[in-house]
Image 1 (tube, each protein chain N blue to C red):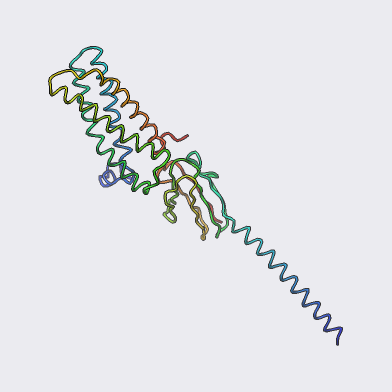
Image 2: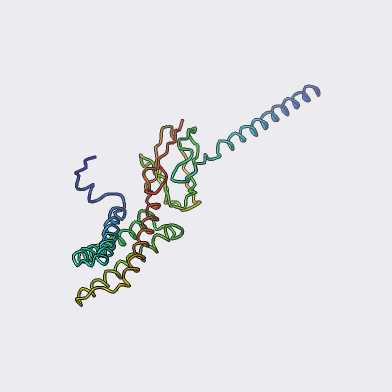
Length: 116
Length: 148
């Protein structure tokens, strides 16, 4: 009887260890996924120009120019305020699709986000 | 998009400042060139051409300053004045004041029936340089001077 209780305890402990380990691993993955994708605005260019991300990812734009810029999607699904030097804007893409965007102050500046 | 759509033309969603700015720049620089030519050739017709170019340049500078301030408030959402934006604003207002000053020298001289004093020529050269520098910075703000 004692032996079976001991075995049961060891099994329960092993299951708990596996669960804790699995949880730690999965939480690490979430943290990695949560890291926003960085897009630099520099010299009148969005860099990288095209980004492919999984749905639910966040994209983070930072203006490194001395000139104000903003980020506006073609379908008006997102629009930043005008960003001064070193100011940023973030947007989380929940739905899959292709999002073309541009700077409405300098419409020649364009970029694309592909959400899978 | 219909290029002859009146509503689109009148209510364009870009800042009108970048359209209107070409008028006072071209008129004033042409006026200065004609005034230098009038001084060199001692030609009253060239002097009259210079005066009228400067008159229209001065008049056109008013809507340009107004639309520039509107572009700053609305298109740039009242962005903090620093760096290129601040330099462009200060130089733009200075250029406008200089254009009016040069015009007034010509205006009062013509009203008194005499040739404007020669000190106007270095002043016109300085004003032309300030106009050119303001336009150069404006080109960066509007993206015209951006790398291809």
